[in-house]
Image 1: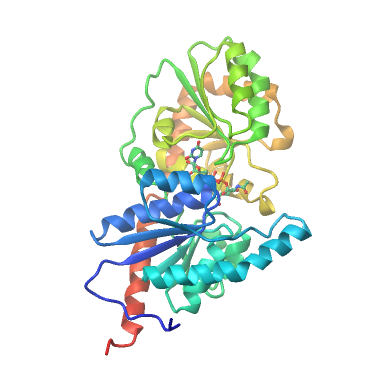
Image 2: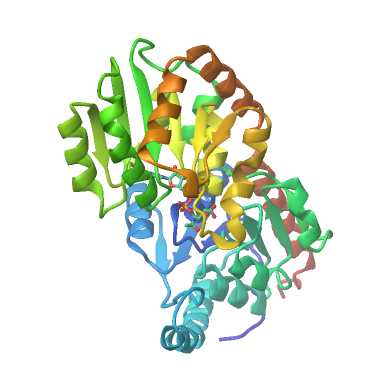
Amino acid sequence: MSDAPKPYRATRGRRLIVAGGGTGGHLFPGIAVAQLFLTRHPRNRVLFINAGRPLEVNVLARLGWPHATIPVEGLKGRGLWRQLNALAKIPGALRQSRALIQDFEPDGVLGVGGYSAGPVVLAAWMLGVPTALHEQNRLPGLTNRLLRRVVDRIYLTFADDTHRFDPRKALVTGNPVRDEILALGAKPKPSADPATFHLLILGGSQGARAINEAMVAALPRLADCPRLQVVHQTGLEDEPTVARAYARAGIAATVQAFFNDMAEQYHRAHLIVCRAGATTVAEITAVGRAALFIPFPHAADDHQTGNARALVEAGAAEMVAQRDLNGDLLAERILDFINQRQRLAEMAARALTLGRPEAALNIVNDLYQLMERSRADAPETP
Ligand SMILES: CC(=O)N[C@H]1[C@@H](OP(=O)(O)OP(=O)(O)OC[C@H]2O[C@@H](n3ccc(=O)[nH]c3=O)[C@H](O)[C@@H]2O)O[C@H](CO)[C@@H](O)[C@@H]1O
């Protein structure tokens, strides 16, 4: 097979590969971009390529979208043996990425972070396909730091991050939010059933043990709360213990490892207690809800604290450091919020002003420009 990029056929819709994922925080912004891209032309096509982790497989299967996997492993935070093993897999992952790209003939490749974006974006660059990255966090992840030199464009969530990237490539777009969630912010509805207090506990895509434990410890103090209704996302391992704790405390709760209906959950919530993953933060600003953030302290360069900062400074959210977290403090903050419904409404309204509902549109528009420019540069079909 030839390495030369194939000339683009103007008569067909455009094709986009979304590369990477691993966690929901990377995957869902890619899905938001794909949702919008697919509305642009009936023959537009999207292919997701990643490592095929269970979350990626399940979420993409529910959407019914084409999905290919490559054999790739992360390098960061692993022992020497696993790092060597991961390095040994890179040539195979590159070969497979290249074959997938040549077969799908994309007009562009968007890397959304996570190590599986690496070989795909690199192979696309080697084949002359236009490439772009999206960075969700205030501090860029390892894959995006490695790829930033080769790509044509870098889409950023935060304006104060531009100095880390080549200014000719960087574009501040915001972090794209899935359209079913965005629809709530566009048409804000009052949280359902005002007499009941709906508390949503989220631990990022994998659940957060520290939040689970603090909440379990807080439950005895919340047991007397009239009409408290909790939805708690625990991650896989803690689901049974957390569910039992709510039952013991006699507090009405829906406890699940993972929710596939986040729009519905955000819609109901009066208060969200959660990690500060970049995509959760973007969704909270898209729907306009009050939040209590407990950033994951071991995220690279403590980027979760950076993600939440703007909301805290604007009075849209509160933040508690994990080292200060315990059941008593969490119960006290929640009880305080329950008694300050007006403040919650004000925080929610402030959160909404920080949203970037146009993020996916910014990216899709720019991807189109990139694809067009590349077509203009492509050699004439003989
Ligand atoms: C430990 C770690 O390093 N985590 C990173 C990871 O987190 P993580 O994957 O947890 O990312 P986020 O909190 O940003 O996003 C979670 C996503 O999962 C969705 N969701 C969550 C729970 C649920 O039950 N159902 C559901 O659909 C949320 O709606 C959201 O879209 O990627 C983020 C974005 O790069 C980073 O900011 C985080 O720091």
